Length: 150
Image 1 (tube, rainbow, N blue to C red):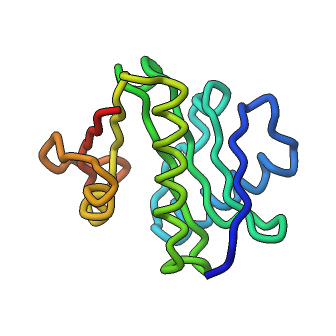
Image 2: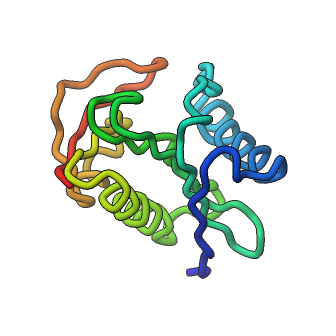
């Protein structure tokens, strides 16, 4: 497994290059690979904290952390993505563990809510999330709402 360097940055701290790499990775996976046409740029990036995992300056994985009250009453982790070439290396678990830890430190006692693609439900359960809804369609893909106490 390759070793990643990690950074967590607010929107205004992102360089143009970093923002470009984030949007490119999200488009590669969510729009092209998953064939899901949706509006990724949704005006939440500006209030989010961005968790970046890099290998030799190349963005490998990413998550967007939203404060309580932005999407849900609880804090939220979304746009969780790992480059297709780097999957199965444990990076997703590292990404989620770091994202959860950041949210617990930044917004203690607020809890976490996510909208998880249903096929990833067991992955998030391993990370301490509990399924809190029946499956529903979001952008044409089955999702479930999941929660975690912090």
